[in-house]
Length: 114
Length: 112
Image 1 (cartoon, chains in turn purple, cyan):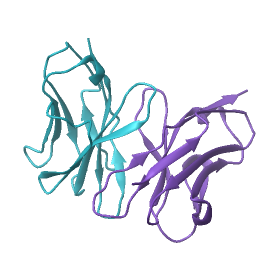
Image 2 (image 1 turned 180 degrees about the horizontal axis):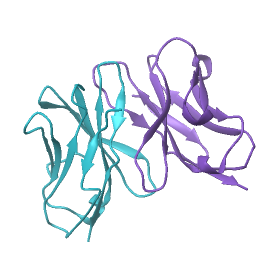
Image 3 (image 1 turned 135 degrees about the vertical axis):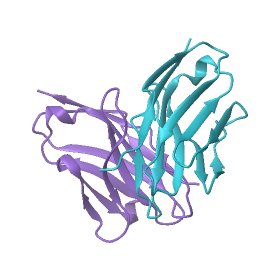
């Protein structure tokens, strides 16, 4: 069975500081990996995904994530936080077999302090 | 950009009542899903639907739940007799063959 662990349910950074949200996965085969963002009272918006190819993936709003197979990690980073980045971030994994569903982590709430 | 549309955005119902949550997936997608998110918790898989039948369901998806794709466009989730603990945000999603997931904006269900 696959699972996703997001370290830190709440991360707080200063505006302009580096954002690092951690995600580790467990899967018996290389998965596809996703990061979603959820703003208050809104749906899930895809930030970026890793499927195959380049392990450093760039997404929207200046975010990027690097797939590290040896560490089973897919951490999300952004060099400089903006106030508008305050939201809930979910890492998710899918097993490459048919239409198996996305498995989500518990989420990390990002707060940005002025 | 194509969207997954969910209606209503918010529904309040009395305990024991039946509710139907509606979704219009992206037309050329092949796989359809319902997820739920209880307030403050993670997003949980409920059920997946492919080729007009359920292909996988979680332990949450018990006999109180059912899904249908009645007319080839709408995709519905029915809860037969709602309980207080069914209060959650329900998300519909559809997926292409190459794992391109798109989520709807959700229906907030409040059971009172």
